[in-house]
Image (cartoon, rainbow, N blue to C red; front, side, top):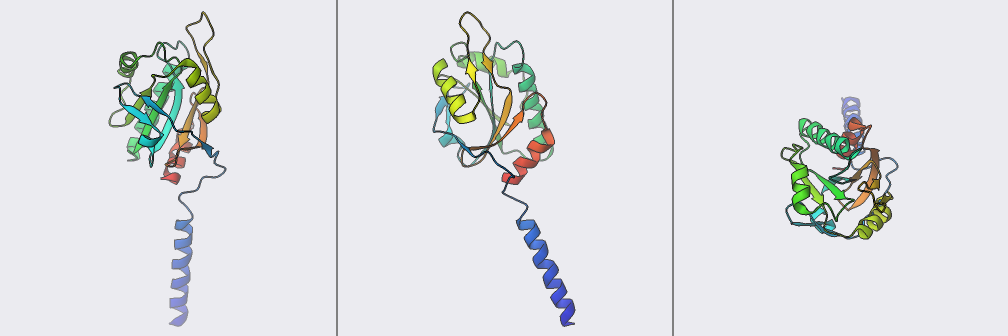
Length: 192
């Protein structure tokens, strides 16, 4: 009888250790600190690190008049949101930074967003900063280049999604064109 209780206790402790070791830690996180920022979304509301504190969010860099990668990136972000909703993960925020802020005024961003159905998800399309500011912010915080050549309407920028944890650190970077959806969902579940 004692051996049976001891075996049960050992199995229970082992199970608890396995379960407790399965959450909260990503393998090889980037841990890029994001500096405090405060920008306006498409509705003119302030969104920054303070408003995103304690939230998991996915970030990208796009612009409304993009003729190449931005429409598929945004469609892929919408697909990710739909997949998260199917998994009943509804507390992820989506943040797009405009890389063409002089063109992407709030009403332009809002019109662009009408082309995509994010359902109940929170999607903030940020702007209201200078071109120089977003170029420096993107490189310093997300290690991605942004450049608007003179006499050209198209902005050069990276094509990644970034997973940001509750403390405001970029923990993972993924292709936004060949999206590893399952990996992103698994990583979100790990850090929630």
